[in-house]
Image 1 (cartoon, rainbow, N blue to C red):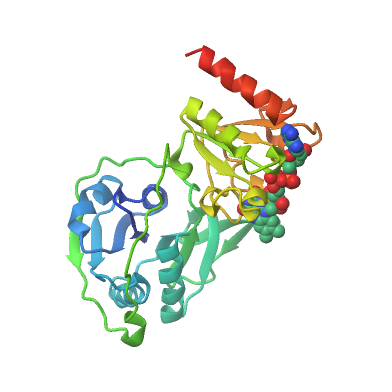
Image 2 (cartoon, rainbow, N blue to C red; image 1 turned 90 degrees about the horizontal axis):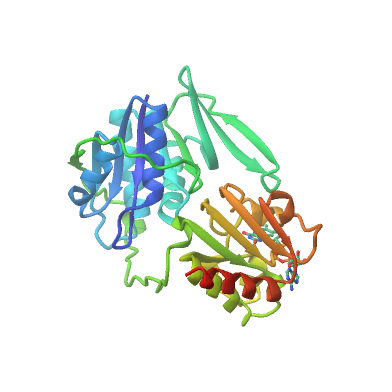
Length: 319
Ligand SMILES: Cc1cc2nc3c(=O)[nH]c(=O)nc-3n(C[C@H](O)[C@H](O)[C@H](O)COP(=O)(O)OP(=O)(O)OC[C@H]3O[C@@H](n4cnc5c(N)ncnc54)[C@H](O)[C@@H]3O)c2cc1C
């Protein structure tokens, strides 16, 4: 099975973690893994892509164009020559843009929101979660034309294959008419203090139980002592207490840290979808019946305003 992974780079940080996750899975289920990237610096990332299992990198340099339209056209043209069996995309802005356009160009279906993929005797089956991740649905592609799959971040682990650098083949930028006239004029990288939410080993998240925007300071203080990233429930994002970039859950980020600490979060299904893969879950909630306690390894029934300052004090006294 020939698998293509749509590779992406994170602003100033080389190959994105989700790309490495896709490559790790592709190696497990495929025979040959290759990448497609919309970048002017494919050779700069070819070593990393090769290390994680890509034998070859097709590169289209879309310059300051929004990459979606041109990348989809370039992949479609190359796919008709190389006949990949499966194309994997991350659920990212560009991944969604390119895969949607590609699906239309090739007239093949795309399965989105995928959490796992299995290949058996040439058949590709995808797992997705529905009803707030209480039910898993398995969907199999009916035919063997290139199958397009959009995978949720953190669905797979990252493991190096210790491979050598991948060969780079430059693909011409196709003329996509007016669709190619959109330009990226400016990039804004949000200032970040502490570890990145998606990659952090420890995440401390706050919910409506904090009572006020100011009380999010408790979350930040605990996170600082632990060297953790801060997250939030949608309730407090919607209330404007913290920016959307902190939202964990179905319509926010998926995190899988070693330790997830939920402060004043009820544990609605839509929140749990984004954090229940965490290795250890600690919850502080004054309601002993709150659903978050059902998934917590350690559940503290208490008031965040009493428990968290004591926790911070105890951690600080340990040095
Ligand atoms: C389509 C859709 C998508 C959604 N996507 C997301 C998503 O991505 N992420 C997300 O988080 N939500 C999402 N939601 C919203 C979700 O359903 C919940 O409304 C939300 O998660 C609730 O946030 P919360 O737990 O902070 O607030 P609440 O549900 O109001 O819970 C607050 C908790 O704090 C406890 N509490 C109160 N005071 C204290 C105190 N002093 N000390 C300790 N505990 C206290 C209470 O007992 C309660 O359990 C989505 C909803 C829909 C419909």
